[in-house]
Length: 529
Picture 1 (cartoon, one colour):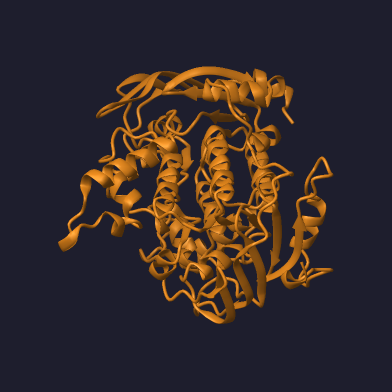
Picture 2 (cartoon, helix red, strand yellow):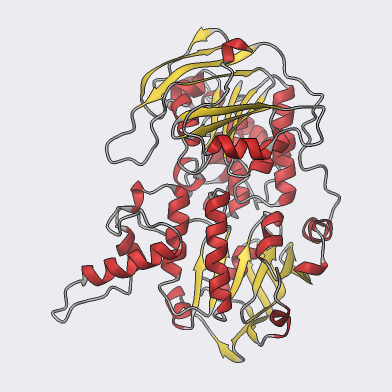
């Protein structure tokens, strides 16, 4: 809810006439942005619109080619993120900036370590402060000296928030902070944001989830193709108006899946009693007797709270974890993947949850990443690559997914997060999968691209692919799935079928209840259907 005084509060941050060019790309063209004290300003725009570039300028990562920045009416010039931090500016990037091999406390105090009178690290003081910061973001169960690499992605995002809170904040920038958070963690984060704005902190909030902006944002600024196109008060605008400003073109339906569309009766993927033993020291959930079917042409969703075991299911099926027991059949033939390479050879493809760590070689080109999993198709005798065919097929896939990139030889790490995600999808689709595993497929993707991804999944299902989808956004699963399986603590605790006779095809309250149930209640086994 917007507080009326926010509209009349003093201007905290003013960015005027910001211009930034990179080789071959004019990323920003005279952009304006104003943030008031105690305000949450949502920054919207499609992937590649210039949001991250603008915020990297504010954070001191890039210097603007033209334009000015003022904080509390005084001109500032940031030469580095540390320089920005000294002026009270902190940024939580979409791609997390934590050091996996360091502890949570070491990450939070990186570059500002506390020391004793003798000059040694004051571990006790840093641990105490870390506990307090973790408590503020709801991570009371995490020990300060736990290594970050043992924390789940959602926990790492909240650790980034805790790290930002360790500064004297004036402006906090949050780039897709809820992309890996379930509803409960999102609400916890919103409570932290409201506490900060009550203290006069200004928050710039980048998100593609317009429904959550209606809960947290006071105002909205919109960029399109590197230019500023509008500013609105959140309470006086609509989703349709914001989407129109963002995309500048008619947008098709977000969820094209229809209740009357019924998948075929043929079971493509059959899973029985799948159980796993996570590696020692890992925070992965042990799967316990997971059983389900996915038919050819069917989209099945995996729902559940953080740590329920959703990602563990797709990782196990992709051959990236060890099974303790269980049996899987693919098109009625036994399937026991020895590795991801084996799974790919049998027709599996995985869109992993963390594209940066699991799906992309960030220092290599768009073409290299897109064709990597399907490279065997382009090999000639003597193992040379048919470069012409590779370029043609990669180009067609990039065009189909509307990837914004100067060329196929562009380094993929320089693309926006959403365009990186599209390259991951291109990599999977070029293998021509019969079973597609997607873990948070629209994480960090704008609303226009989300509609394109949902249409793509629907098209693949119509073509006979079996799709298993994990998403933290329950409305996304409800909109695109034929069935939803719910997990809690490594077990399936509920199964829900799309009901074409109801306006809402699934009962959201029943799904949430199953997500919090430790034991199955009234669950029909796959063999009984």
